[in-house]
Image 1 (cartoon, rainbow, N blue to C red):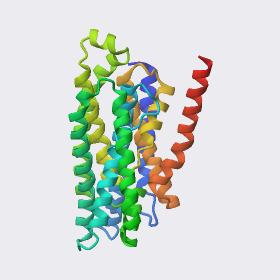
Image 2: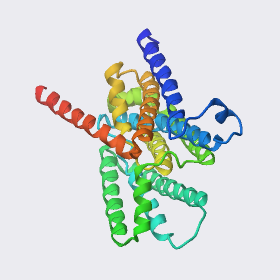
Image 3: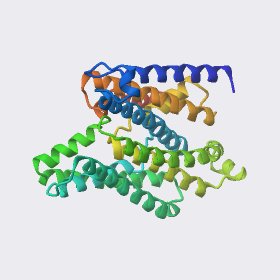
Image 4: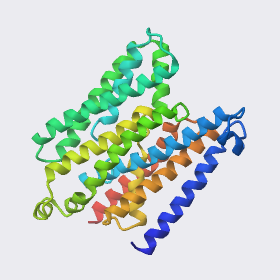
Length: 327
């Protein structure tokens, strides 16, 4: 482990801790340590802020890890966590639930719970479909085409539902799509943590064969890499990581494209284990910064990540184009 890597990890870790403390102290009401560790008048507000920090840390770990897997597997710096259509199907599931359950009265905590469950159910269903059809795709680029078609179909159905939706249902769907990190409860965080832990376990198993895959298909097979098994690991890991965050926070997956790109700029891109660790640390830092910015400006999380992400992705596209012209 090089000194450069240790320094980067230390800097990112300290920055995450500092931004987490700032996040806990950001809001309309100033809090004290007593509010966080005892049953005081503002303890409920303190719990909301603690949940906000925890869910941002989990999202910061999972989304960049998913994007990192996609970019390394497809060897494309513009591949993101939503490239397989998981996010689009999660949005479609939420849209179906919101638009067809508006006449059913449910308490808020059940409403939010079923909202997340519908997104997870839709995402996992697509994951099973991907697993069943992936064996028929000899070329991994067909997975991208399949994901694009699924995303287009899901987007068309969501647009159709929005056309005939009532005003309140449409408003609820738009609010979900903005990403509401203050609405996540402690029980939902526990479910999110379990799903992310499963996804990270599959991600851990995929890193070593990804190193062989980076050398090319022929070399990977000569080193004993099971490419079909790797494809399944990538699908399951990326699906769990992106679906879980989308279910509880909405579609805020732009950092899944941005963070891996930044990590390759600051450290050797060939060292995938170190790249994965840097992705998690930088992802947590960026999500903390987005959360603090959102609390100060009252701008939705999805809007902040998009405003930050779109110029960066445009820069990446132009840089890649210039490189290809020079080559």
